[in-house]
Image 1 (cartoon, rainbow, N blue to C red):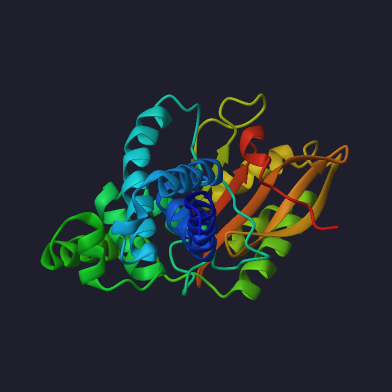
Image 2 (cartoon, rainbow, N blue to C red; image 1 turned 180 degrees about the vertical axis):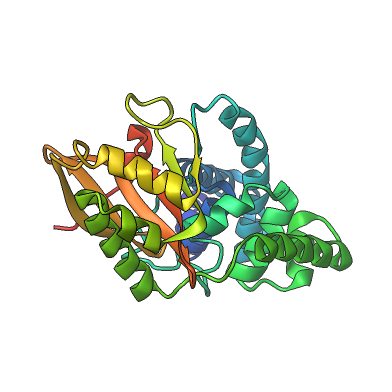
Length: 297
């Protein structure tokens, strides 16, 4: 075999190895970064590095690619958090379509719902990466220690701290069918301006978050409390919904309403809920993030 033909065969083998694990790499990157755009860019960077590295020294391509992805994601997250300090209004994760691939290459669906991703913003990059690898992809503590250049004991601490933070801040979410039913009921009450029904649907400390990054007409501060949020929705019910059509999609493993204005995507609306009711209303109306929103045919 000629050297040139050997290079072609080697690159084809490298591409095949990368393609096999690409869904998992994207799943890791997205959960660490909460951004489809940044995750896609990062996975592309991993592919470029995989092409140019000395693959003859790599005994486990899957481990090498997961390690490269995780370490790059930690670096990107650190810089992304600095950029987000200039973001106008609440920042929400960029929605990802999970209808075709519900777990984005993961064995389990952990660390994918909006509410969980928001809580994970409070973790350190190391805690977040360790939690994602353990809870979503079932890596062993020893494997995570290798990926993070740490020790098993230190990794156990990272995962433990992450779990405690998440469980202390949030009750268990409701099943997918119940979440969709609550969102459907909410949409009807919001359209009609049914104040009593809205208050009934909400937990006492429900939070309304609108991510528009300065978009005109979008609230720039969170609203908290069932009465306050219900009154706000009542106030906008007389005009906001007049030219809004609703289609259904799935984002981050949950039902979401695509809000169409003149046939064009205005934004995405979803709710998170516990057994007590809706505890978060999430309006994703930043046009840059809406690019990832698809409307089922």
